[in-house]
Image 1: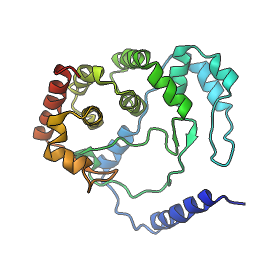
Image 2: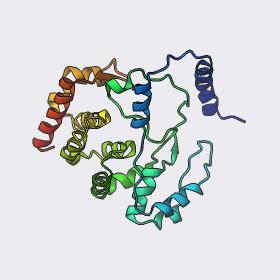
Image 3: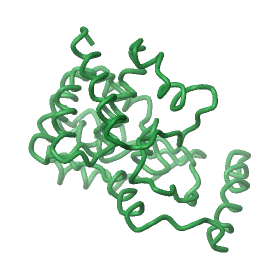
Image 4: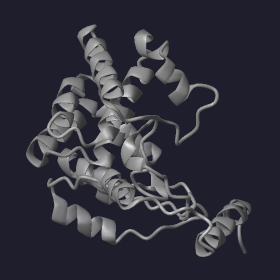
Length: 244
């Protein structure tokens, strides 16, 4: 028998599935679709990777909410670095988001207010968030170490940086962004850090109102252009220099 939450989920998602099948959604351009895939790419940490992948593969979702936690005994036996890899690869809590959503048009020309979901229909559990925040210095150090090697800030890393308020990584994030000026979600992370810390010059700006004001939503954005890029980078640098 379906639970009330499951019935609600189906009532929302089935119409979207039918719309997709009927071709009601306008198709995004090739460049927009390519950038969408780029945005969703996570970074795979190397620490205890074979061991952690095997543990994750053996997890069976359970309960009415389809949560998928590693059992406590196995979790406690992981080293700090292995726990980091576990959290970056696997989210334990089911969030029941619809699979089929309208494509975002011109995604490669936008700077978004929010990051995409890093784990599809799952999100970090309270246990996972507690680890990330209680071990934030180690988490940020491991992210920096991994990104220095891979030259890429995956979506899971971006999500973790925002989760732990990793403002001390601002100069590093700017440095990585300037390698190719391609990953606009790094600009999103910078804005989310300024928002989280209530940085006045950003909070009082027109772009803040458009992105996070009363009329904003999850897909709010500003256009990517040289002026908006420069403004975000300069504000983030000033925020960091002011004592972050």
